[in-house]
Length: 258
Image (cartoon, rainbow, N blue to C red; front, side, top):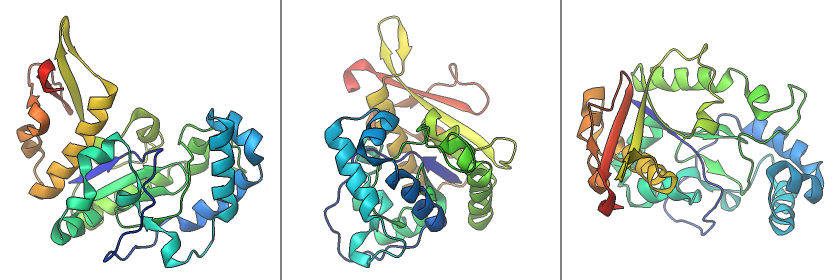
């Protein structure tokens, strides 16, 4: 199976040793988009991404420093650089070498700047959400910029991995950039809920972490059969067939587990 997750706004830029970054497939596009963003300046970036002046200045500086051919020390593997809730569940730094090799072939990270990333693809520091209305020659949004290319890249990754199944552990903002008309893979979407008074509810913080944990579960078990997804029990979650429908698989855990 192939599994996709979202990136994170927060980055861990501490260097890592013993890991050789690979080159992103859409490196040239990342350079181009960084150039577009560079031309906006801090004030426009603040409005574009709805961030503080301080964060806008930081990211303007990052776009200014973004290089077409960065030095090895200027990049960090994507799965180790992103530092949000999903990555707390993925815990990529604790994957052993064999697991990381499997992840390199079966895990993809969707990105507003880089399009599609493998776990070991080296990224430069940036922030650019997929939902940002960054105007390019292809349209007014990043969805317009990427068009059907993310779907086609995932199709290629599926063929290379020998699978026709994609497990969507990304957010709606990011998976919305994958053109469903161009995607040839069967999409299975896990949904993670907390059992609360009044019935199960999705709690964003816990759901994001669980999506990362599901990606790790797939990698650790080298899952190839979708039926194996229903065994996921990390963090106290249990598969609920009564709440699931088709390829929407619902997992619920007791409220006290959160």
